[in-house]
Image (tube, rainbow, N blue to C red; front, side, top):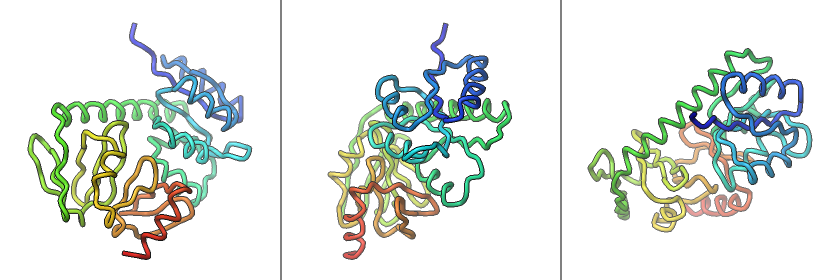
Length: 247
């Protein structure tokens, strides 16, 4: 019998949490826990890592659902599905900066939940297939003063530094987002960060390196590049602001 997908539910309304759990169980998934607070959820992430987490944005307490995901992403990446109710634009932009796989609006329909899980699983599968396809042979990128040569479809192609928007960590891989294409590299974000020219790039989060020249907006906890909100760690915010004044 195939292993059941493990799903964590973080929702402070236990009636809603129980209904979600029942539906997921009936659909053949394994609910690892029903958690009502962000602090308890952080412990659960450490002790019994789920494959998907469904998290209510409006958790009560010091940390809301977005704060919880931000803290969780400092140490690990787990596909997130947000539950939302009357979320304003500010909350939506904060949530978007954590790169969720899906949003479910309350009150939700059973089919909404089912589709969100299926789409998330399809995206996880596609990411794994792409990594397998692109990384059959490990080739370190060549980094020059104005460009990077990276492997793409069995060839080494040149990517101009001025065209790179940002670079995103995917576990032991990196995804370069350029103005026209995306490229997957077989190396960690930490290793790539050490090789990139620091006059152009800065690491702003454990999962993101950005091209300083591409930043178009700076908010309290995120920046915007090409209409994408990218989270900024508090510890790195001051360095980012200092670097922007020198370019």
